[in-house]
Image 1 (cartoon, rainbow, N blue to C red):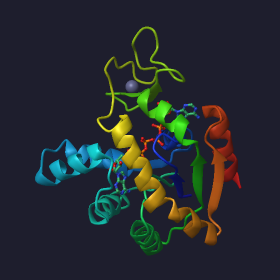
Image 2: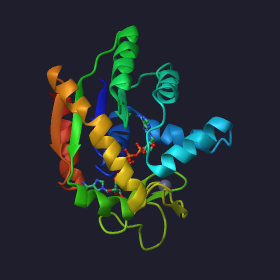
Image 3: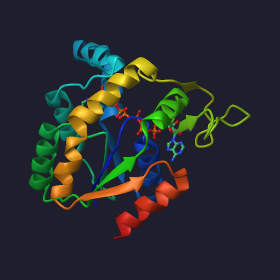
Length: 214
Ligand code: AP5
Ligand code: ZN
């Protein structure tokens, strides 16, 4: 079963994808994570990617589609979760072609709906475990008092370079301009499901679970 998690920055895509990986043996394909890996490679492509990401813009379709294509070649396990992909109509077309070539279908496109003012709070308060990528938040999911990640025991936590109000403004604009038109595209295909992303993490998880059981 393959799904897309869609929503603005801070909507909770990564948080919910990690739950699905853990509980349903699915594979998380986060283009954001892939690009962060590419930028740390120090190549010329990595440097260009870093500049675009830090400013909050979108990386070219060509680079992103290439990264996704490579990842689809391996074991499918419980299915793919596309997290932060597609973000443009060109990416959505490419994904349709790639899945068709594999004889695979899309079960649902799940939109996590969250108001802009809440997104700012979520992004500014976010940190991740440097070792396992577990996502924390200063208010809603604080790092434990002993300073150790609950998942792996790691003690180093980092904040993303693009998690500041300026980049976030651009990221939001890019989302509304280039990505939100995809909601209509998938609605027309009968694939779109909406979830209240403002609810508590466990409630969001249950709503997504119900869509997967459907
Ligand atoms: P990407 O890494 O995809 O970032 P994003 O879309 O901005 O989304 P985030 O990771 O910021 O948020 P999220 O929805 O995963 O929220 P999270 O679960 O962490 O992309 C980064 C950049 O890479 C882009 O700007 C672009 O440059 C480039 N890029 C990536 N994909 C691309 C593509 N396809 N094409 C072109 N360029 C691309 O949650 C946020 C916080 O809220 C956390 O602290 C969490 O603990 C908390 N939280 C989560 N759920 C809840 C809840 N229900 N209640 C309370 N708090 C919650
Ligand atoms: Zn960890």
